[in-house]
Amino acid sequence: MVFSSTILWAFITTLALSFLGLLLSLVLPGGLSLGAATGNVSGVTFFEFHSFSRMFVSENAFSQFTISSSSLLPVIMLALVFGIALRPDKEAIRPAYVVMNSFAEAMMRLTRIVTIVGAALLVILSADWFGSIDLSGIFMANLWYFIGLVVAVAASVLILLPLLFGLFTLFKGGNPYRVLVGTFPAMLSAGLSGNILFGATPLIALSQRNNGVRKRVLGISIPLFTILGRGGSALIASFTIMNLMQTSGNSQLSLQTMILVALFSALFSFGASFTPGLEVLFIVILVLRGFMSGATTQIQASLLVLLPCIQMAALIIDTAVIAIGSAFSSRIVSPDDRVPIEEMM
Image (cartoon, rainbow, N blue to C red; front, side, top):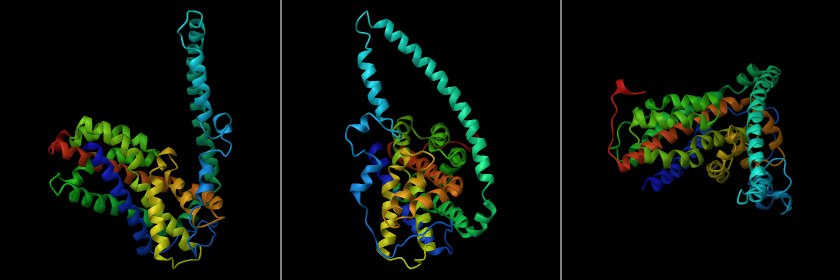
């Protein structure tokens, strides 16, 4: 019951939020001016799945298991071979097994040092890069887009998600705004960090302590929602794509094109969790490859400037989807365990 309710909530909210982004792009004025978004969307060009698959699987069936600069698969295959060879099932192998364990500990320590140094270098390089960009000019040129992001967060978190929670629980599952208040720190953690996993850690404790969500529900719903419950990313992606298309010189898009944008945004959001920190950019680029040929490289580079704001909006909504969804799944198997306000964490 918990598994099926989690899947149902994830699919329904993703579709609803994706179409909400489409609706907001039609209601709110303005567009998204990046200075490099060019293309033609007068007709719908469907995806070429034979070329799309090359992004995930190499054309050479052997090299994808041996040579790659963007995949962990070769490392996994090499680790499998070493693991089989170094099984300590014979006395002569055990010294080599101990040595490899020592090397593993040394590599873990080296990895930690490299991570700390890399984080410091990332701060310096990011500050230098953003210092060379006219952020105030970009903000003023896309003021309506940023207003749209605020409206999207407010409309989804304060209106759509509570309404869906009420409909799913037949308005007997308690106050959804109480659920949101109880998990508000987790929403801020995910939004400000740009990583849904950083927000999921406090979300587990807050959902159990403040919203009365059962442990066995959290163990199933939270991991599933971090992969499938990415309605916020789908919403911001569809809203961004529609603004890009309107800015490209095609203000009158066909109904078929708009529906396909919303549907594909929802579809690709289910795979966005495999690119943490770049979920919205992942969805936008994949969808635009089917509608705006030749423009994705420039758009990808330009969207990096706006990515912190875009990711913040998307992950706040994603965390709200997870919080309310886990509360909905818990209400099915247990009554509404109300926690007094003075005991909330």
